[in-house]
Image (cartoon, each protein chain N blue to C red):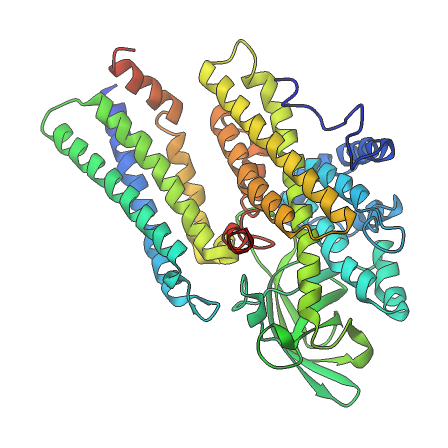
Length: 144
Length: 370
């Protein structure tokens, strides 16, 4: 069980990193890509999508770091590890999905790279304990 | 749960469907199960499906359901919904692009000669068509397209590029949006380009739709005779807009068929008393979302066939069903665990919120008109 907790924490960190990569690729694309005579990054809806993604990423990253710090200092915070794994994996998929959407048709094509991030990140919600298992663990840790 | 997983074969047909449409539905469903679905895995792996599939569908009269004087858009809708059960989004896309979006403009705007030359053989499945509008620098912003048709003696010379063109490599003819006039939506015309000199096609690899032949096209001074002009010169934008409504409706119908098929498989496993409560509730929510999408889509279909302005309803149906179809498959994948068909269907469905106008474009259209 102890090893599983480490794996889940690493899974959370990997999810944040993968999603951050998709975010960075997409931010560069949105600044460069023009539609209706302006960069698509200048549309309010696009700007809000990035703001939303950046907030999710930061929350997942800080939850992961804080939990990792406690784990590294000898604690065994199963609930927070499960929460970090659940949350980071979920928001990573949401971020990657939004990145595909911002790319439009290009996002669906292999050559732009975001579709691979999207496919790869989906495993994080299955491997090392599915979302449903994380929810069960968190629920039990609350005495339910 | 049985109502949520209903097959869609209504015993008492609800308008716009008639008893004849429900009989057609049963026929198409049997054909798809016997002739297409068994090959889905192989065609996905090969990243192509045989041209003979077009002929097999044509032989049953199903390619031209939305074309001509006796067009029956409701029948075409039934066909599209059932085709979604073939197990490969790419196969459905290839057939749909040919019969649903490439040939209808020829039927509607073509002269008798043009219909004889391209439409008749296309409806027999002997010629395969593609609709070429999107360009590398003009996706959602259709009016920005740059493929240039310069007038020369006897016709035009066409140069430019198109991308994400379904059936793009194997098509015998391309119903192509070109710029014949000034910038913006006022200078666009449609020309039918036949495969040949000056046209090169590169297949594109994708997240899903693997069996679909999706291509990037390059036109290098392709000579196109004057009589290949479809409809009026510089009035092509109207043709694009007319076609979009039908294309979006077809996409909504495909999503309705796909969600129903997935929920039929999943409901007995996840919806029964033996399953967990969370899964049971998730399936209930998904079935409700799918059913709402079906009702909205059929409403849009009724408005469309009645001949009125159905932009609002079609746009809403497209917006609702495309995201729903992906999320239903994605969620079922999580609940049911590894499943090849669901995994493929989820990847295939992810195109929905992008193709035929993104969700963002749908919201823009609706936000401006409400």
